[in-house]
Length: 158
Image (cartoon, rainbow, N blue to C red; front, side, top):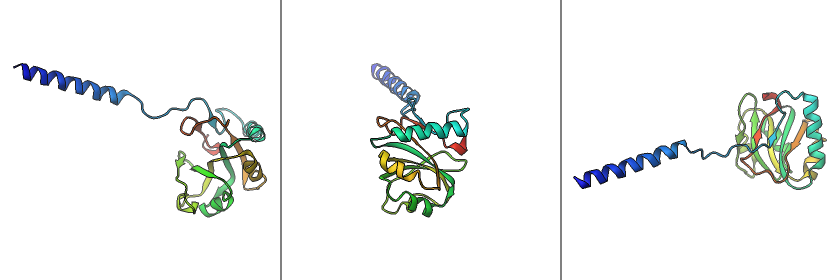
């Protein structure tokens, strides 16, 4: 009889730990930093804020590069050839898609036209890119931003 009671107590404890594990969030949540326009922010206001963040960027940091019109994966890969790392791609009406880094980025860019990308590189590289007419804005986070702890909102998905 004692063995049955001990087994039931152990089973109840295991079930409690399991239920507790289900209710504990393991996904990192945004900590306040965000790339892209704020809710209610006009296109002009966002462009000015993004321009200021780009001007201040010195150290490598995450940045949202928004294209003036959707680019096919080959065009985007060509445009971003000098960028150190592409972390996410954004296609119309879909959440950002995390991508791995490959020697040929078209392998991970998929087949749909891209409206924006999240990259990681230094301010000098990002400032050189903004002169390309295929890019409308580059919004740069502070260099202490950590991957997975900031939000991304593409301008056309607002």
